[in-house]
Image (cartoon, rainbow, N blue to C red; front, side, top):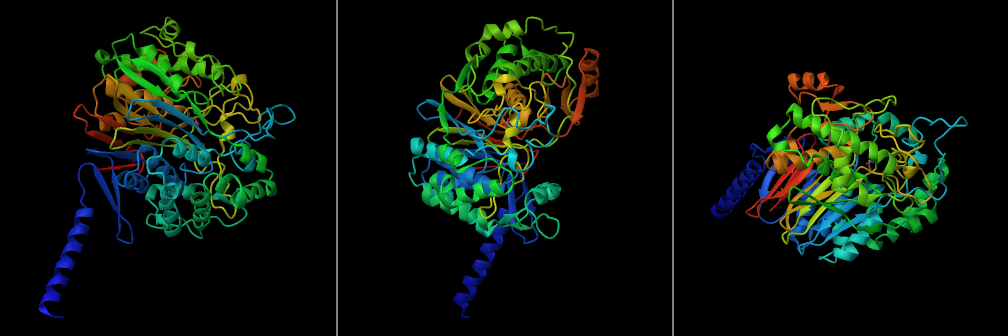
Length: 580
Ligand code: GLY
């Protein structure tokens, strides 16, 4: 090696060293985990960006979205790519075998909402989860093939692409996910333990080998590859919705159903269609709230909650004061009672939207609010509180000011646990979001009625609340979260934290949360969240309280007054922001 080559070789080594050091930099907002292969997994919880930002449940999905934005795609293009990337990197909730909702605000200030919620198969019926004595058969709507609704994601992504894509290159949006599924990605500590926890259920409903079960337990740094999923994504990249709802993938899905007592058939798949809906819109203290209409209860309930507390000066009560919590909980109690009765798929049931989001109606509902005393929910036996509430959310703002707030789900963690043999994707257990029997709580302890009874082709009621907030006609907040029934109250608290308590995106996202849903009649409070004195006072006022593990995983982007995008990803999991 001559002197010149030695010098070049030294410079190259130095450069590589500096790159590794800089990529491993840890600052206040960045946790860097080193896996056993010494490659950094970067998780950024809070960053500010000049142009565009993505906040999602997985750092690789956030990066896929940002790369699409840098290549000239808009927020909708990025959302499509992030949705597919999460189906690979975040299988607990990211998906192509489930559904979701997308709320859009364009750079021109137009609002839109896409409903790609699953539907009940044509052979579903009202009593399908009841035994001969009309009692609900435990777990039938949660685990295995009968729990699955007809998936909506791929149709939804194609509809969004057709209407809004700027890149106009569908396969470019799916390709990063194909690569992630083929090459594999590094499993985090939390992912390893969540996969290990479901091992028994995976084995119970899948008689063939699946990517999520291996010889020994998962550990951080293992690589999860999904070759069958890669093939399915290739079919989607090539043929769009037809690559999923028809042909080889559809045949595999229906074969999976036929072999195992499921009821989704080829006609269900062919007929599935996502729908553009008019978002629900309302004012809150001079801000405009834009959120998801039915079949989600989220937008209506969120607006009801904000309308209910608007006449009160919550700012002067103070953040997490007894007075503020009592007020918010009493609003939640009334709104969730309304939810159980009035909310369902409006293609099948007349939802009184205008009344429910009306200021006067909600203030009438609060007219018996007593600032010193808890009201009583009805006497129905409270159900157990569950700690696993999956679904996932991502928020995106692009360089032109288009915004997407998208929540997607296969319902509980890893959905029905059914992986379509040969196609490698997980199917949802969304049928549990219907009311299997009036008054009997579902997994989330939510009770429902006729409005949310099962019917062929009907969409099950959701709590997903992808939301966008404007101030003076300008984009201000993009927010949402997973968490089943707690979604609505988590989004509610995040918005109140920003608007009333003046918090930035990070403080509003990371602060601890509480939740009340009418039944069970208890305030659920994140552990180590509230001062013992506050809890004592609430109990003296007549509230029952219960401590629980984390509530929600909120992804928030706030547009600061100077136009800087303040992006935060929830500390409660591996969620990560990215942008430029
Ligand atoms: N699967 C939870 C929801 O849609 O609310």
